[in-house]
Length: 208
Image (cartoon, rainbow, N blue to C red; front, top):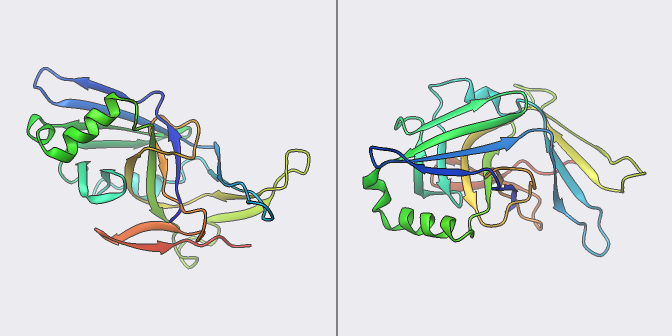
């Protein structure tokens, strides 16, 4: 399983007069994530999400998107279909605001998450997505060589991806997220995406 993510420097958690918690976060576009340093003999791999890469599903209000803990559909925090997640796309970033009702705050995994967040142990956001098939989007991604003056990495730029969820994680890969990012494994080179939650499948292989 692959992981990517950003630090949660600008993640905000505020209590409303109703007792609900307002949780805000931001996932910036155009920032490179180091997915693998290449080990002893391989090449480093980096990834960049191009501007509005997640726009397709975000711009369709009827498409449900979830806010989860650790990419687990068994630990949801909010969703669009439930009316508790507002997620928006812009040229520079994806932003969201989630509302966690007082009743949800009493659920054990939610209270555990809030305690871990308060302790500074939840430090990033990781999006769960898949790349659309080539018949739908011919140039959804590209892989190219890094500028030799900067290094020897392979850099994958993703121009179009189907976003299904955002998850809070403890070890993000994208350094500039404000609680945002993704799920990767440095060994299998694949991206985890739940096609039929909560079942997960390894999709979206690196292409040379």
